[in-house]
Image (cartoon, rainbow, N blue to C red):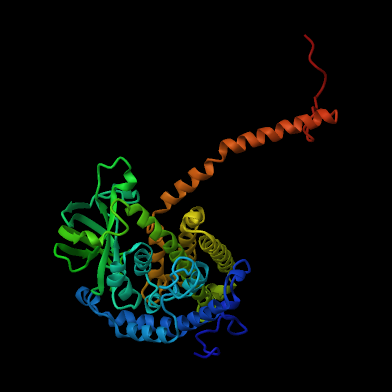
Length: 474
């Protein structure tokens, strides 16, 4: 992959590698090995994956049955190229996983994920795609040796895929204590009954294991210990994938988002993850780093949208009212706002990644929640501006912007809706209110004492006490 490749040109003066575009605050935390890998990732995505995206979509086929059965050959070819380049399993952070991953930090992988977010094939091609990344972290962090051998090893090798089943249509799943799928003990087995939806990955026939969260102890007084996560082989009798759900009209084949029913599904007790009643612990351990991955991929998608925006307004064929689009001030204002918002979001995500690396996802809860709200809103706005510049073409299949817009809107819901994170952030921030009220009162008291010390009478510097005429006489 040549540096002079036209697929890499990103400035008027040529190509500036991703390693040289890292924000200054993050550079001290990035190793030389990660810098080299980052540039390899960028080249792989720009030269190989983005051109392959359209081929992948067409190889899927046309009918629903085809799209959720076919496995495009171009994906296997991309995987082979990625492995040759050493671009495989970069997501498992080195401070938590010594043996399973590629040895990068959350920050270093976050920078790579930004590149991966520019292509719909790149994440899977490097074995760094959701929901597999989160599921692999669960198995690596909480799995038994047998669970690792059975599920983690083939996932790490890219031989199988997986799915994560948590939300349900009949309850408000943003509060996971509401989930109702029952997990009932029966001797050496657990029996699962209920339904799940928005089960990403379940459409892919290569998804061989589902991580399912259900209610195993509904009478437990601690509502956060009523749930259990179980690894369920996808071919277990009693599972029905009823339908796939569309995302603003897109089916996201071949992995998709399934609506699934469990009817007396029997799973051996050895398939429980971490332990009965520890489902919330498993889920929280899974979601923290995953939100960083989503956020950085979204930053990359926003950069791609901005590229399409800039290309469009500089197309000499597009001259509304006698001027090129870039000569209209409103377009340049939108470009500037997009640049500011992308850069601000990137810094926020990288800061959260650094905090996770220096402690854990629990230590960075505030920062993770902030980017979970900030980044999807940024992506939504940037893509919306790019669509507007493209006119009718922007909402059509002729450009990737419409599907990016659907993804951006969905990001405000997945991994916890905005409202949940905003409410928690607001509550935690508001805890400082009484302390700050007292602090301000103490400062005012000190000010009064200083006025007395200097024998001064406190008065407003703009005070005039100006009166008109004489006082009236009765």
